[in-house]
Length: 320
Image 1 (cartoon, helix red, strand yellow):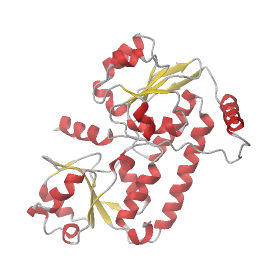
Image 2: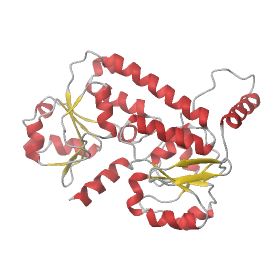
Image 3: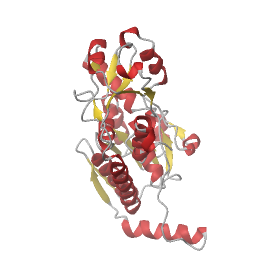
């Protein structure tokens, strides 16, 4: 059972990718050349090399100089790297990456399994792996490091604070310290605005389904999406931690105000299942598809994910 739950969690958290939302300099330059030179100057002033950062599994990763060739093995990592303005430095991404559109020009190095020979041939200065994929990448990581390729394992963040820390660590390792700090500051500001807007709402309950075939899995407490719900004052009907499996009886008994699903086919699967016909959300038509990318990826699109949920549950307040 635990193996099945882990697989469901992995498939959910590894869904696609990215956004290149690098912050713009608030002080305009007179031309593109001057702007680029200014940005380079800021980078060199803030970046400290050699730099050593401890990754999520307790390993100290040291880079002697700013990396010029970077590979990302998960969509959320890629989103952060593009958000930091590292388009030219990124030479490889995962098969699951779909955003921003620039990923289409990057070499694909694998999805659940990675092509180590291809990774090595791209001569990366650093590879950014992810904690959620370490169950099948540990040996691959060891092989890459035996070739002299540093691998930094990014934490599988379960809340916003851990995501902010990830952004800052990746900023340190790539020489984009100032950009990472600005990225975090903008996200935090936007979340405060959303929280303020949600204050005083009726506090609906929601159940988020991440799979129905063959078993029903839900988003529990201590997860990234759970914090998104909390940000807009929505109660998570699921009180179990992580991504628990639910029986039809448990699901019906919870009877949430709103049912949110992350896969299109699951909307029909719930609406057409006679076992769920008497649930309030089903009878009122409150079974909705939410964007799986922005709500699952621990990257710069946190705010977009929160807004997508808020617009679905409270369209009268957060509607476009």
